Length: 204
Image (cartoon, rainbow, N blue to C red; front, side, top):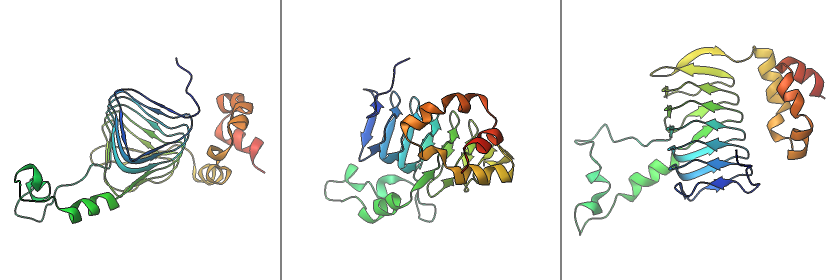
């Protein structure tokens, strides 16, 4: 196991375009990040494809995850991208700048301390709340509440990780904003205490 550098680690085979990589992050082999903000301590595993997304701190993103995949136009005579990638087909034609601007404006948000399972997809304009879990292979087409566990196609709530009162307390505590030294100081409690016991110890 390699210790992550504070500046973050991007594997040589990954591609990062117009993106911000936070502290102690990792971008896995063969992954593509395009216009992504990857928060501190978050990582994506191998062969992830993320576009126009804001990812909070401590997000756990498994391999083969797709975030913010753009749509094709359903209301036109054709679905094909010759309509907006026109320069690929004709020398005298230009790409449809308005279409690409619209795509870029549709931003996906993934909260703090989340887990996105292997092969999951999250559509544009979706918000995945803090503490939520997206099961492997799920396709998320609607916002996911904090600490919900969703699965299926389309994804639906299976259950919640914590009861409502614990969710509210965890959101208020916002431990994901603690500094690096505080996290290390309290590491054993993260490992050994239940969520309730942890809150009882550290709530002010």
